[in-house]
Amino acid sequence: MAEQGGRRRGGRRRDGRRRGGARPAAPAVKTVNLALQGGGAHGAFCWGVLDRLLEDERIGLDGISATSAGSMNAAVLAYGLVEGGRDGARRALAEFWRRVGETAAASPLQPSVWDRLQHDHSLMHSPAFLMFDLMTRVLSPYELNPLNINPLRRVLQETVDFEAIRRHCPVKLFLSATNVRTGKIRLFGNHEITADAVLASACLPFLFHTVEIDGEAYWDGGYMGNPAIFPLIYHCDAVDVVIVHINPIERDEVPRTAGEILSRVNELSFNSSLMREMRAIAFVSRMIDDGTVRPGAMKRMLIHAIADEPYMRSLRLTSKMNPDPRFLAHLHGVGRDCADTWLAETFEALGNRTSVDLAERYL
Image (spheres, rainbow, N blue to C red):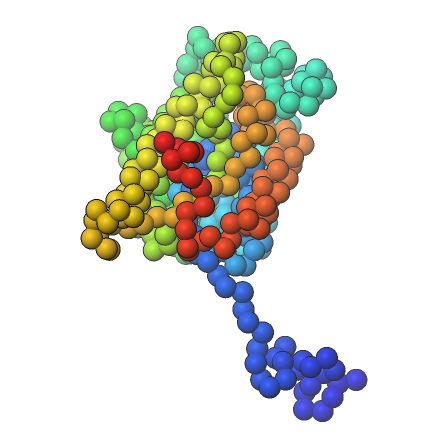
């Protein structure tokens, strides 16, 4: 039975305050920027990371820079925030990836029995995929897919209200695409976010028609920014940048087979722009530390990384083309576990220091 005066046994009142009127201290919120890499079906790893970060109310979001599958995660997350806050974002991401898996289940590009027995989630022994892969090397998407059918467009349109993002998005979005004609990066901001902008950011030229927006043609943003860091420096207040890595930076073995060589070329090209920006950030940080520039003349950015490179190195390139629901769920779990470990080890560093060795990792 409650005590008189609105108090309960155990020293607490009904309203949650301790005796004496003091409320329990709210958890300190640290606001960060997110940088989300692309990587096809491997983007489900990023989904798992985001799911765990959204679950932690100590983490606030200022800006999100994203590319390819990262752009899809960013757009879905932003819509979920508009509709239902953190829980809404988690539900929206789960619904999006569920629909991706359902769409993939109807595709002829399925792992073979041997692929499933090997548990490497690749399509290396799938007859349909091997035929499709061969055809993409000799025929363009305009010849293979003259009607320009892209199942991801329907998934996005059924999952995301882009008008809601353009009107009410609570975070700053920067989705990267590559201008085919000029070779320059194009950033789509909040008021420009559409299904076309997201698909432009994820347009692999060997698989899809170029995406045309305002008379310009775009390919995957990974060629020029995977993801771009500079908009987070110039346009966001938060100084912490959390990079969610999808593509491994280092490998121990030199590739020998055609598939291994192609996979490594893909990783190198899609990491190159990020590596350049990290070198610039490391250079600025050294100048600030050395006193080469006067205090306040340049902005110090604090860099953090969420990655599971050993696991990502174990996956074949073709697994990026395998959005099998079981594989997506597995990647989600790997991402959640990785983010959980990162929070336990790195939360204290947010707002205080860079938690990765920039020279060792990026220079």
